[in-house]
Image 1 (cartoon, rainbow, N blue to C red):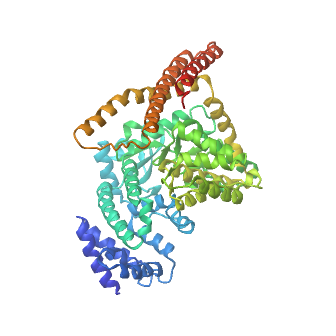
Image 2: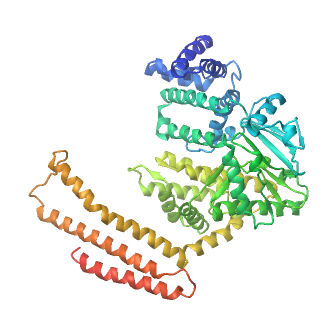
Image 3: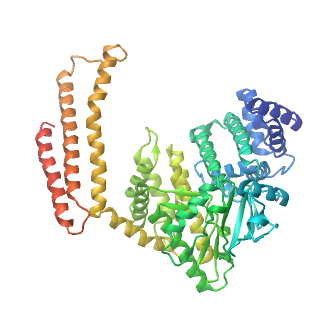
Length: 561
């Protein structure tokens, strides 16, 4: 199968799928040159031919660049040449051990932007278009030579008229149009890949592309990063060891972001062993504050985004990728770590099962056995500082995927961030114990979970749900009866076991009544649990009495059960 024919055929396929003809041709040539042209015509061949295409893709025999190189290396080289959209897609893949084997995921983590710097004339025009005047007018100094150039934008040093050293991040022109065109092409390529590798469909690549699209839209609106800088600045305002750069809203738009300049050395360049250890502990504490206390975390705290300043503070940059973790998710994460440190295999499996979205046929015993095998490998009989949570979670995600247990996207991003944090901390100071650094936050969360205030909040929330359920039941029943009357649904009854069926209906009614009573009792008790410290013991007793009353009524209703 000749490369020229593959590229020609693939280009025709791409042109049929998208409107941007030039970009389609460009992608077809790049894909073909790296030995993946078969992906472009998978929909045109028979089932027998697809097996041959699969072998050709894996072997790379048609590759012009990287012939004889393994598929992972060719894939990385191709993605880097395809540009920012595909690089971001590869970075998403690197955080998905359920989608890619570990050896390919590690390669994806090495993806680098291959972009040319934006010329100074274009930068000047973009600043004028966004800020209303030329750089030399707005700033006392504007450095034409960029500090950094990446797929999203280019960063220049500058000095404000008030004498503040800043950096100005300017977005590449035409980025949104490029992303929109590339995303349509990417959907087509994924569809073709599924023709050759149909087993990947169970991993829902469509949802992954939707996630990528949302991330790209967020990153191309610098207003989101400005907002993140403000929120992180507020969260760390009382932390004397961490420096979040201050944004300048008056000098920022959706495509230009001006912020305080962070000056320092890379953590990996620190020579003194004691300074390295102290810095690693500050770094871990900052990362765990984000996750366990604030629920808002930096998505990519790699060595290029963290600096040690002259005064010993850690300066953090690049808040384009941030993650959020709800209080419920934080509680679940704490429960898993707590069970891990206590060797509670069943507890880990139970919490993991609750977090994930297992298919209906998943057997909990199988999941528990898988968890036990992983804990035996990564946790049991190891010292605390030897445990690598990032490796454990990576293998747990991959193993869960094989059992049709899908991990939520917010947890996947969190695990990737934790892996980056753990890896850099251990690189800075060998033998450091990340779990020990997390312990104070875990203890604080556990104490807060069972405080009177939190119990009151939980009780009100759950009671509200129970009452809503009881309130909605008549409406649901009315709709069901209406469908039965109109012949849109059928109810099958038989004389056989009629008494048992009636008994079940009666029990169901009793359980609904219990739910309503429990909800009312919980609301009564929760309202009695005032937030003041003086009301603490009285409110808890009142709450217990209310629940006991509901329990007494429930026993009477369910005695027939």
